[in-house]
Image 1 (cartoon, one colour):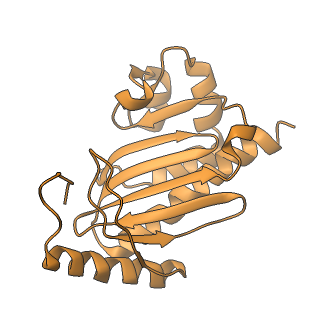
Image 2: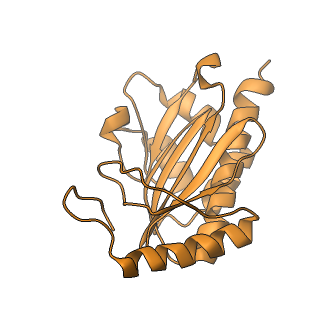
Length: 188
């Protein structure tokens, strides 16, 4: 369900979201907790499933028809971000609207970045063997938005099934951790 100011999820929609969140939590070894925040333009999610790793806070927000996956480094102000990209669709909120044709052709999915981020900077991070492998495993048919930089990820996707969601968030978490290690730890 997409949030509106005058409509909350019905009891049936909340029950469906709860069932899915509990199953996702079981699969990834976490727990489902109630979630009441609303972000305009995103599905209204009734449950949150923490999925933290290393120095990152990850969470899966679950509605009856969609999920939102977010992750960010706990000390995000401590890093200079070398690139950012919106994958599949541009994201005006982050000014990621310039199509990067060469990287898009290489990965088989549209890649956008801000105009001031060069295609070379984007390709240096997304075209590494490890990142390319992970990106090629994602189900982009279900993804509406994927924004990533070296310390942050945000994904909005259709809820195909709890199993599918769990598989996708594992890949997405691994993708951000891989980019982070390659950009910040291996560069040092």
